[in-house]
Every structure is written in C-alpha cells, then in structure tokens.
Length: 143
Image (cartoon, rainbow, N blue to C red; front, side):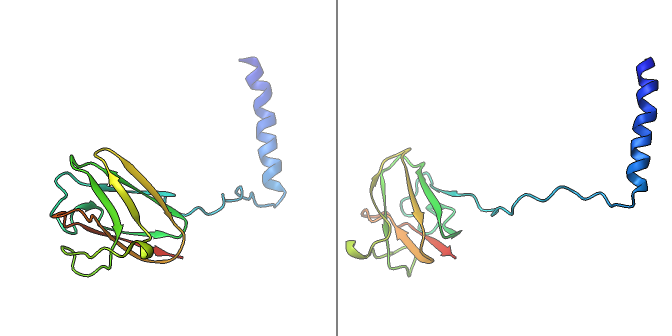
C-alpha cells in the first residue's frame, strides 16, 4: 500500500509533463488496408439441386476480385459436374466445347469439393452437364 503512495505522484507528474509539452498524442499508424473479400469464396451445390435451374447453387451468382479462389462444395446426394456454359436461359444452359472452357470439373461426388482461382476479369457462367440436371451459376470477376 505504501508503494502506491510513492508511485502515484510520479505517474501524475508524468501525465502533467506530457500534457504540458504542447505535443498532440498521435494514434498508432493504421494497419494496411485489407480487402474485405475473403481469399476463398464458397459456393454450395444444394440438396436436390438437379432441375433447380439458377437455384441449384448457393449463391447462384458470385462477384469476386481477380485472384480469388472459388470453392464449390457438393452438399447433394448426387454427383454433379461443373462446366463452362454459354449462359443464356438458366434452365437450359449449353456447355462450351472443351477447348473454350474455363471451368471443367469432372465428377464432383457427394461431399466433395473443388477449388479454382480466377485471375482474369470477366463473366464465367457454368452448368452441370449431366442429363436432366438443369443447373446454372455464374462467377463475375472484377479487377
């Protein structure tokens, strides 16, 4: 208890000296600005996805910055594919020829995941090309 009485006047004196210098106390420098977008964005293939058109993926459209990785997770009990499409009507997507595909994932089994990093700005519609699996989604990449 006695040591507190000795230390307290020195603390008060230090504060008064600091205030009396006329210098403003500057806050510490801010941390470098970080993008609010995560480096990995997850898209889920929902249960009973086949035939749900643009509601088969959650979310169905994702806008990301170039350099971001997209991870698709198959939460359905069926196998699906992910293939670049020509866009257009959401329930009847036409897959692109293999040489024009940006997205081309073979079979994505139930509970499986697939990751792909998008570096070039643009729009990348995709579909599941299995028969009667009318599904569509889109990745929009901005600089």
